[in-house]
Amino acid sequence: MSLTAENPIVALVGRPNVGKSTLFNRITKSRKAIVDPTPGVTRDRHYDQVVWENKSFVLVDTGGIDDNPEDLLVNHIREQAMMAIEEADIVLFLMDGKEGVTPADYEVVELLRRTQKPIFHVVNKIDGPEKEIELLSQFYELGIENLWALSAEHSYGFRTLMDDLTETMQSENSGPLLPEGTVKVAFFGRPNVGKSSMINMILGEERMVVSEVSGTTRDTVDTVVTKGAYSYLFIDTAGIRRKGKTKEKLEKFSILKSLAAMSKCDIAVVLLDAEEGITEQDTKVIGYVLDQGKGLIILVNKWDLLKDDKKRQEAVMLEVGRQLPFLGFAPILNVSALTGYGIKRLFPVIGSVFRQFQATFPTSALNRLLQDAVDAHSPPIYKNKRLKFYYTSQIGACPPKFVVMTNSYKGVHFSYKRYLINKFREGLGLDKVSIQIIFKDKSEQREK
Image 1 (cartoon, helix red, strand yellow):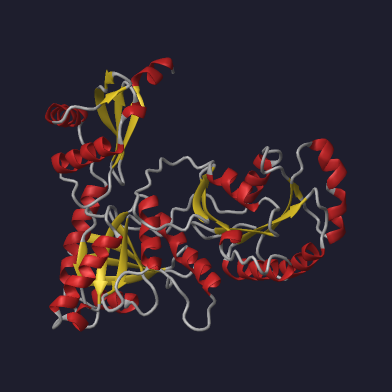
Image 2 (image 1 turned 180 degrees about the horizontal axis):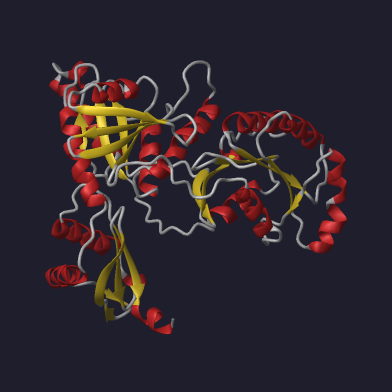
């Protein structure tokens, strides 16, 4: 069975202490991306982006979705399984090989049998082939044809599981045919924040040619927009939270359905509600944007409701700044989807963010910039030796990434790294995107 989602959601389901978190950690450590987490932004660490053999997916540890100490057994796992069936694309159901089959296992297997989605029945805590022979046979009593033996702690069976898991996913997807240079922009926001109204207002502008293409990620609508000489793919994601009688734990799964679309965008536009101000849910989404290294634009919508209240306007912007202290680079626009206020500024801002997002620079200019920065502010002393920076080069774009070779990367204090990031931003004109600087020891390079 092959899935069509570009970034499917894989849910880990199982009773407490069967090893969900251990498996989650082992899978997410296999990522091949450079991650430079930005402090000061709330993140939900119970989900993560994973790349395995060029297949990308979002992994969810359902144990983090509802940690209710009063409901740890059958009811708890039944609810986890129901959520996974409804919201995930693939379910990894983990059982405990040492404890054996339990009544809860029988019940959850019956629940999972009713879905058409791929289910991986995994028996954990099996540390080798001899244990597999001893412990696995009893689980066939559940009436399951395929069982995966695994030791999440010691990695026995791990590669087999991962290879089989990613085989159910479609290979790298080219997606719809788009004009060359198309900027992919995804819109995120909680229900009632005005996201759909905002997109409708943008698409309703004159001098634009609009055509819909079928989205490859569930619950998104993709629209190609041509404005002048430029083309844009607008990705209208599902709401961050469901309307109606939705429990909090289900809402967290629904966030993932929207964020699974993020892998294919260049720029994420996050809408905030001027009346409500910034919420914890908003900061989680913004944190995910930063983790994914995407361009970011923040729209404070419903600004028309505050047009006669200067005090409230100032309070809202101060609160946004307080909640996002490390986001000085992200453009923030005050807009109104109802009246169209501020929307004309969006396209020029998208253009400038995208240009910086994919910018590349010659190594000679980067080394001059590094030398000037070091001359202006000497690196600190580390273990009785002055830190030295030998040279720098760009190792990637989208967003711009740079490596700086040094005599001791461990001696680079956070404050000096921040200083160099600011100097690079200033010298390279990168004031609207995040940038990454990675420090490596020159001696390590010689040894390779």
